[in-house]
Image 1 (spheres, rainbow, N blue to C red):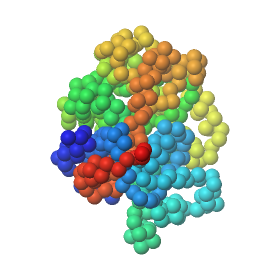
Image 2 (cartoon, rainbow, N blue to C red):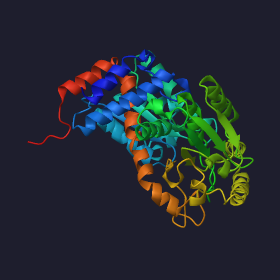
Image 3 (cartoon, rainbow, N blue to C red):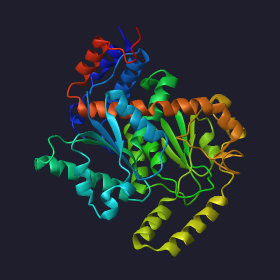
Image 4 (cartoon, one colour):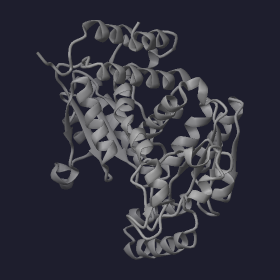
Amino acid sequence: MSKTIELARHLETLHINDMYKTDFYWTWDKTDDEIDAVFTVADALRDLRERNKSTRIFDSGLGISIFRDNSTRTRFSFASACNLLGLEVQDLDEKKSQIAHGETVRETATMISFMADVIGIRDDMYIGKGDAYMAEVSESVQQAYNDGVLDHRPTLISLQSDSDHPTQSSADMLYLIEEFGGLENLKGKKVAVTWAYSPSYGKPLSCPQSLISLLPRFGMDVTLAHPEGYDLMPEVVERAKGYAAENGTTFKQVSTMAEAFEGADIVIPKSWAPFAAMEKRTNLYAEGDDAGIAALEKELLAQNATHQDWCSTTELMEKTANGQDTIFMHPLPADISGVSCEHGEVMADVFDMHRDGMYKEASYKPYAIAAMMFLQKVADPVATLKALEDAGTPRWYQA
């Protein structure tokens, strides 16, 4: 029996009917079974591709990407996911569209959707704005479908908002599932999610927030570490505490990297901006206060500079459960001391030691996104996986 068939049988045990034709904004909006289904389908799609079996479920169609922030990994992961399932990709460049001439969100969303099956959106820079924009796009395409303007409703996937990064945390989970030999083996693992120094400011909160919201649901003990004043969104932290209590795991907060690294099985150091400062920045941009923005940037860079010791070193790694062999993760790109900057999130020797692992971590994102699309677009995912297995159409034909 192939791995894909085994995975299809597991998928059959999960309650996932509500995923069909729905959007994917946040992991906390999905049930444990639905998140498990993402992991399962992603694993099946990867297995099929590695055995040179086609995973195309579309003969034609478009995947539309809207990136309102810079991106390398997520941009190419979305394109790869679309291609894996048989969709062409069209990126909406807002600077080259009629948005610059005052076109509304409703009009733009409708115009790009005539032959689109999926819309992926990244909007993570301003507190409250990313989630709001995605909701407006979703409501717009739904209204166009209800009015008969669209003959179908494209589904939406968040490629990162101001609150959550579901494709990144799902890829992280897939990597850990592979490294530890199964989802069930993650229970009881200690994870350090920690702030790290960066010479820049304004990095999104959504990466750490996504992790602390997802990991406790699958039995992992999470320690969140950051200097005073670098708080995440309060409601997300409370949600993480709730998940830990529901699942018999621990969620604790500490004020040093050393405390977080102590005995950890997995460490994930990543810089982020203080929630209060990001909220203030959002308001300043809304008011068009250029002087206020410049003053805030200067203040935050000076504040960051007082925490240059928040950097992953070999000495810190020795405090972990397995020393230098402990799993070190980062969503990339990392600020590498002595390489990409003078002082950064991680020392070059630590980064070099774990480079392959971080690159493998990134390799799971196309499959995570493809799995979300698959579950949105396929009425019977179990039967469809079995059909792809049975068809055995070569992805790469060779005589």
